[in-house]
Structure formats: C-alpha cells, structure tokens
Length: 311
Image (cartoon, rainbow, N blue to C red; front, side, top):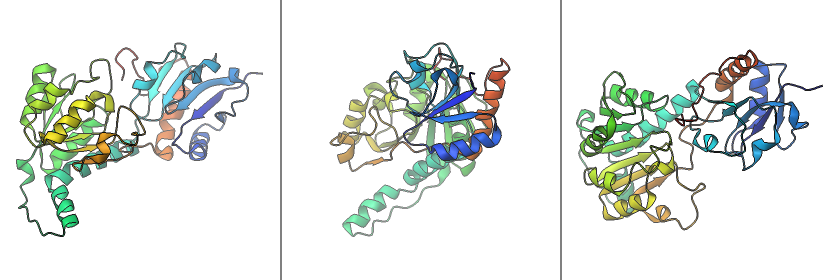
C-alpha cells in the first residue's frame, strides 16, 4: 500500500529537528531522510536544500517541493523535476535573521568599524567622528519577503533608505524606485548598497562593471542574496581600485568559496559562509505542514513560487 511520505535532504539543516517539528504538526506524515527513502513511489513531498543532480528523478509521485530557504533559483532551473508545485519558506525567524544581518552589515559601515578594526591591528588610536544616521544613504535592491522588512527596519533606525524592486512598494520611510533608470539613480545616489534580489534570468549579472562604476567612489556593498547577481570579476576589480571601498559578502557564484579565490586576500572584504538567514524548524514547520495540507486538498501551497519568474 502506498504511503504519504516526505523526503528530506540538506547538507546543512538538522533532519532530527525538522522531523520533530514537522511530525508535531502532521503526526500522520511519514518523514524520511535521504538516502533512506524506502519505496520512492511513496514520496509525495520533498523538503530540500541544494539537492544533487538527478535527486528528484527517483520520485514519480512527487507533488510538492518546498525549498529550505527563500531563494529557489536552483530549483526552478532543474531538468530532473516533473511538473510539481513549488513553495519556499517564509517564516518570522528567517525574516528576523536576515534583518539582523543587514542591520549588522550596514551599521558596521555607518559607524566606520572596518577603520577601527584595521587601526587596532596597527596598534593605533584612529578617531573618526561619527555621522548622523540620517546623513547616511542606504539602498536595498529587492523589496520582497526579506528585503522589505530589512529596508523598513533600517529606515526606522534613522537611515535614509531607498529601495529598488520590480514593482513599486509602499514601505514606511522607504523611497521606492523601479526600472532601469531607477536602478541607475539608486546606485549613483547611495553610499551603502544592499542586494537582496532574487536570482532570476533578469537579475543574473545585473550588477556588472557599468553598474558598479555608477556607485559613488568608496561605496560599500553588501550581498546577502545570490552571488550570481554580481559580476565577480568586475567587483574584484572595483574593490582593488577602491572604487567600491568595502564589501560584506555572504553569497558567491561558487560555494563554498574556493581556496585561493581573490576575495580571500582582499582586506576590504568581509566573508560569511552563506548564513545571513537560516530557517528555524520550530517556526517554519507550521507553514510547511499547512502547504502539505493544502496540496492534499488540491489547493496551492503557501508561498508558492512561479517557476517562470523564479520567485
């Protein structure tokens, strides 16, 4: 007899925590951790993060794929998936973690912390007079489920914030720009640029040499979205020349970032290993369970992804 089973795969998430959280919500769910999947025909649902090539081809009755994160670009381009429903996680814990990362990165630059870090290594007292936060112009590229709250929080802290997105957004304290002209204005008019763009065919490589050159000399760049939205070679050149003064990078074209990559040697780059926002099973399991309940009833899951748009 066929069973209603879910397969779990992630190289970084804890399957025990997810099993406990999800079966508390859905006691009848058969939770299986790859590679111990039993009969592949039982698998109706997949809860995954960066599964290997060919992963989904084993499961002929798959109905729903839920991504263990907000970015689903790696899933919508695969060739081993039959038509299924896609959903992404959007839990309060993930939003709070991303907001905290962006606030940290922006505040670090706003308060000149890299200057003091370097001064400490030299053993020197290097005073830089603080500036009012309202004098510091910050741009957030991407005002979606993660970018919107981050921009709103920065504005509430007192920064002067502009957002750029596919469509106009109404966020308290945040100016909203759209379109190519809007992107160019945003890049030219802000000293700290934060990318929270989803990776889509339109956003891939959207920040190239021409776009980086629009930024004010010495601008600070924070990327917590996807590495491929930026031309890495162009960014390296801009960082070496000082046109981009500093960067905080959580994401890269190749992950883990390979040994010997130029980013490792640049003193003006802070590297974190793709952890700006992670999912908290206890908080996210409710949404995953509700999506499964909806698919069982023939309805769309929560936070459904449109593969054509890529988000």
